[in-house]
Amino acid sequence: VASAQPESLSRLIERLMKLPSVGQKTATRLAYYLLRASREEALDLAQAIVDVRERIHACPECGNLTDLETCGLCTDEARDRKLLCVVEEAANILPVERSREFRGLYHVLGGVLSPLRGVSADDLRIPQLLERVRREGVQEVVIATSSNVEGEATAHYLQRLLKPQGVRVTRIAAGLPVGSDLEYADELTLGRALAGRRDM
Ligand SMILES: [Zn+2]
Image (cartoon, rainbow, N blue to C red; front, side, top):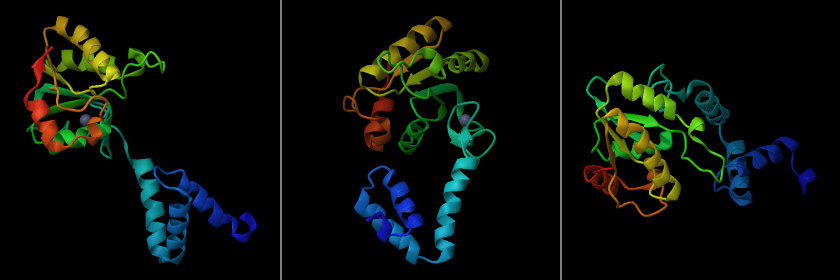
């Protein structure tokens, strides 16, 4: 079968198949589409992939993804700098923003504590969180990790570290299905979960 197809075409199909939810059929269809598309359209796609890889990095302050030196949220003067929302991944920020329920800043952990997968506090942006809370005089930290076992354990770990610093620590209200990712939570549910946050 391989020899019936030019090598470069097979290679493109193989690469496309590595993308999430793309099987052989879809990959083949996409590859043939790109072959028929104008040279400009195909090269635009290739360039867009190169651009996100080369321009986007984590904001040194909050860990959000940005193509600026410091992200647009951190430099927004209208945001409440005394209020931080702790999320697992940068992808979790957008749904919280869409809920329009939060006007503070964010802190991306880069995952959750997981003894089973060998993820300890040193692997997450926890030291940076503590340093930031001290430096900025943060008054409240809202912990918005997932409501699964690892998300809850991480929330309690952070609460034990932050409470002695005199910071109010809150947890978004139940309402997210257990084990659900914030990334997939709808904005209405998320808005309610934020508005109904409770002291830990
Ligand atoms: Zn930032």
